[in-house]
Length: 117
Image (cartoon, rainbow, N blue to C red; front, top):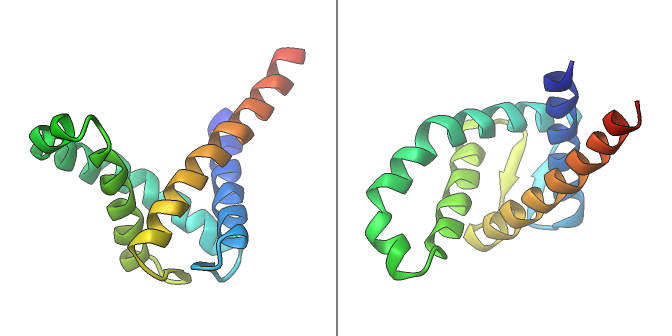
């Protein structure tokens, strides 16, 4: 049950992020859920490979290059997912930062409900 709630909250975070940023577009909640699934798959499969290959650059930039990798993952999801568009690299970077923040907030809110039971 926790996985389903997390999945729905991730879709909600995508939808809220697209609403707040004018350079990110999601057609409706169904596509936001699809973006959440594709992003989870991309982060599980492609991102670790990129992180390993870019260790020297990441160390040299003191970890800031990981933000670039996150933006590239958002752009890859844009390419793979219909109904989801990002207008450029900087919007992808802003969306990845906002998505991380929203997922943290929504995750904390759902954890508080679990702790009350």
